[in-house]
Length: 488
Image 1 (tube, rainbow, N blue to C red):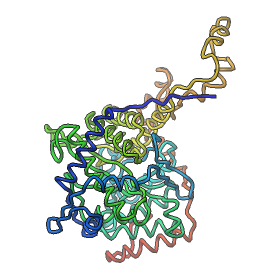
Image 2 (image 1 turned 120 degrees about the vertical axis):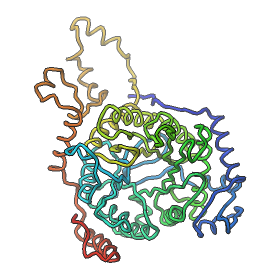
Image 3 (image 1 turned 45 degrees about the horizontal axis):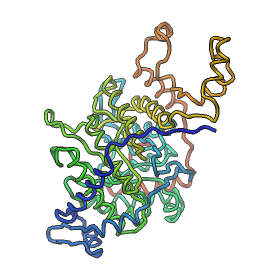
Image 4 (image 1 turned 180 degrees about the horizontal axis):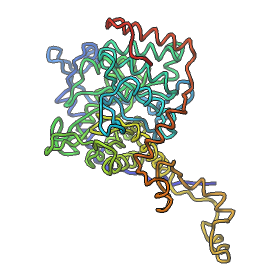
């Protein structure tokens, strides 16, 4: 029997967590939160929050916070397109998915980024489908050849057809949610089937400081009523849209997420909600929001610990880089974030593939990041011990052989103990590396991308489902006076 002591990172002591949560609740009660959505204000008003309708502001007391936290589930299960369990969001379980909604794609042939088109999103979905350490896909790109009014639903339409993995997504317009829900219902057969086996997670992002826009609050409520997991993505920028100290930013992050949980749980108690975020430590020198900053990663790990304290599934944008190309910086920041996220036990880790402050995706980086994810999964398995003497008998045996290569113990355990990366990671000696062309990691990743896209075919949807999805999407295209959308 093999036992493992899972390595774990806890960046906050329990007393500090309690203080942050208590202060966040006090912020909600005394400072309040802006809610632009009328339905959201009505729900809060009906739940005995103090609502100033003219100012669109709500003040929330501790008892309402506690009531809503009790109804929010501590475990969420998300299923793939075939109805098989893909994500078990609870405890310290970790799952990686690509970063989403990039405005650009890095083109390794051109050695620069460019605006993506629909074909890029198709390739991205197919590539994600093939990478075993990515447990979900995302609507990772915003194709420039689709009108922005229907881009949100078009991305889901593409992703549903080109990968069987569950999807992390979101809307860009209020009329998008119902259309996107209709697509998901088409896959599951009916609304009850979608509630029982959710296929997608919708990001819902408050606007810092302490504000829910009309759109995001609308989506939050719609997710609750539909039983679709809502992922709260609070985004305080230290020193810009939140207090500059990490602790102060954590108070704001907690208050924003708690306000979202309250609106969500009032709308439908017991509906699935994820405690997430995408904060950043604002770089005063450059005026940028570095996701690869160590302070950003510290906030991520800390707020995830707060989410666990509140008994909620957790999410973070980690395992990504602010670098503009595949270079030392991109590997450094991506690996550091992914490993810290894994050690923090964050349930949904969004980021693989991303460059340039969450604005750019790269197929080659996605392949390389998949290897980092594999390393992270191995790390959290820990160092196991078996119900036997650890090494004494083996060392006695090896004293005559002078090695362990042919030992039955070695043959039994070496595959179970080791993580073996794919060919994109170089473990050859210098001579073999030179004979194989002295290729860089980026060059090897590019070769693997081309190989996967030429050979991997995701399991196709039934034709009747494709016809229904196409009918939905074509009706949206006609609303924009388009006879057809880009070929998919």
